Image 1 (tube, rainbow, N blue to C red):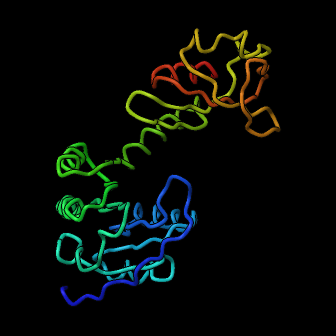
Image 2 (spheres, rainbow, N blue to C red):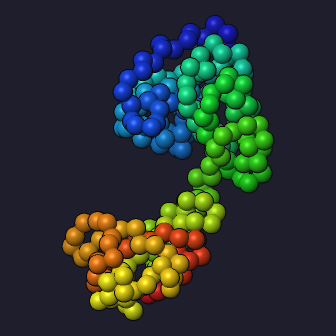
Image 3 (cartoon, rainbow, N blue to C red):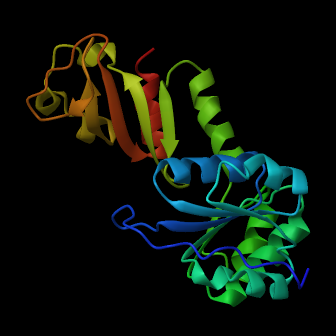
Length: 235
């Protein structure tokens, strides 16, 4: 692997405010591919790396650059020049050893912002111990989201961390015809109405004078249990 050519240097260009316009994605499976393609759509330049020649071939025309490489080898990463990136995403999931070794090797290159996918809690703890700045659990988080959707009380669910969540739900019958100021939602239910979508309308900011109507959709935020309890009022 030591004779592998270094990829063309990605040029810096005007990116998204507060973000990075050059991102390294390691592992082009379903998760890594989805992240890479969305970053491309956002105007970022993406270097995708995978140990599979097939995966590299499949993405050759879709990403800024793609390489076939063994990312568990620090010498390979040094030759590729991954230390030039400000952000890296480790999307390796099925091979936990490769995930951990790759994350550790990327940490050693000095990349300041590394996101790593974990498939189990134990996997995540190891990634944290080797130095991953952010550990994500896409399967677990999606499972939680789907569970809330399946019960029919929540239209959408966004869990921001273990204890705080946003829920999209319809207006409970008891609140129909009341303004947000009169409803006392925050005091009574412990959630804040972030936005509202009137029937046949578009989402907009909620104000104290907003009057709730049957069929309106609310996005509320609060402690996870409070968000769940409020959503359950809609059925």
